[in-house]
Length: 290
Image (cartoon, one colour):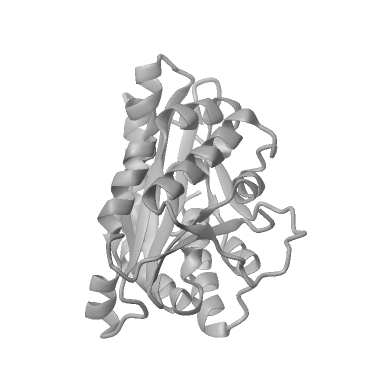
């Protein structure tokens, strides 16, 4: 794959492939689909139109590989969960995900890491189970020579108040963070407590907390998806928050919008403007809270 994004496409003129059948295939392949949202419904209500007959944003993950990768590379939370877009066009169904190259570049994890490669293989297995007669589309993008991850990361010192637990501290921070962003039009379609949901079951106890939030904004994904439906491989955006037991610092991060812009050769201002504005809003909220 020469691109960070890969699009698996299949003829669906008979309508047998649905968003639900795709979800089932991913689940059966070992990639748990945590949400599979029909974006056309809110688009129709908010903008009174849609771009595609079907346009879904879904999130998925494999717990075992997530744990293995985070043990080595804590920043892998930025892809925990992973995301995909599903859309129909001209009688074809399409699924967009990150490729191995995209997963490696965005996280800074070596391309040859065995667990990252296993994750990429699992995604391809799920795609082929979902649409057995599909193929990878040749995308009209120039080959990427940009090795940057475009990861936007922050850190801040942690000082607990009297009798405050790490969970209390994180919950208070998260409540303030989401409380500041919600009035600006941001939604949080999924929340994961990796420490409780994955780490503890595996007997891994290196973190005081490790959570991820899925962040979405209709005013961003609606205009961008018109010309670039495949950038749903980055949406909803995954935001991680963690603190290791042996540190007094909390770390946070998300994939910056330059990923969207550079990996899909986005040039139109109608797409770039809302992306840049949304990233600036998130950055400002965090900076004001530090």
